[in-house]
Image (cartoon, rainbow, N blue to C red; front, side):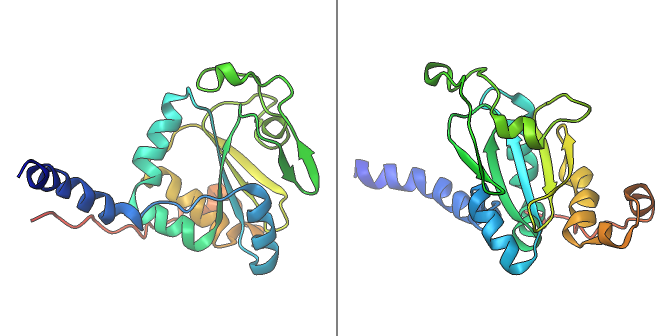
Length: 190
């Protein structure tokens, strides 16, 4: 009887998790994303985050768990989640980047900055977290965009790069001024 009660208590949680399972961004590593992008021409989107960053967790929880945003990213990009202070070696454009100062004992707190972070994420020479790095299908950085964004705030940027608008010479400011959201209102719960 106790097992049945336990199972019944957990059932709503399991169902809620299943409802959002296909709404989550399907993250991969950079080397895999680059290989896939060269085959299909989709751009690469890199979420540069750290373990200790509160706005990074908000971006993940509020924006990347938004079903419409996640669906758009999964359809139009090869998404990569990259720990800016992690210890893993990363191959990017054929070169291996490391974090020689990484301290495993500090893995969940501030650590040294990974070489790849400095190669792809600085804005005016500084890094901040979170940073979304937009790359073309050849792995060239188009632009890093720093800071937390809601689904509504990130939508025009995702569209600009995801639909290749930047390729025709249209400046982002002009695109953004005439941008019309394609987001639909969330369905109300019964």
